Length: 163
Image 1: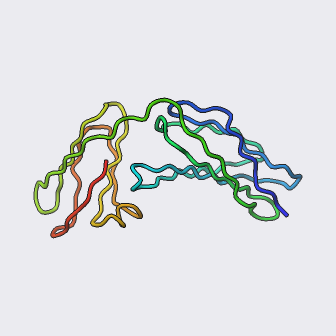
Image 2: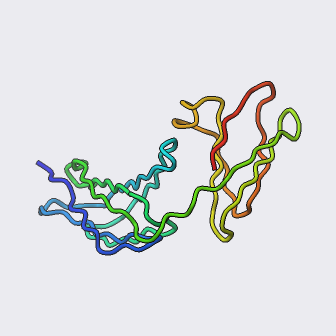
């Protein structure tokens, strides 16, 4: 039986998490697949996937959000097949940034100007869809470092926006 890998949180801060991966077996490991999950505003779950080569590994994931819960899941790729999943949870330190105040204004039938308030020098994600279900499961999205963006939409549809 292939055991799951051990995920150990080495350190964390306001915008990064460092963790190590190892196996408690003599089975040869060729690498790991790691998923990092977090949720914004209860509407949208985000995921970042890392493909890591080698048997032992210490990784640092940066560009995270302060005071946000993150779930790390990992499995090992071995000579005998993939291991079961293991999980670790951590909340980054600091104070979570305030939610931006979004305004969306139709420019014409296929373009919407989105603008919001918030700090500069950060990356904003704009998510939009025609229903709450689509907004949660598979929204259209765009990222920007500015405080506004124009998105192209389908004509004759109503959209929900989240930044």
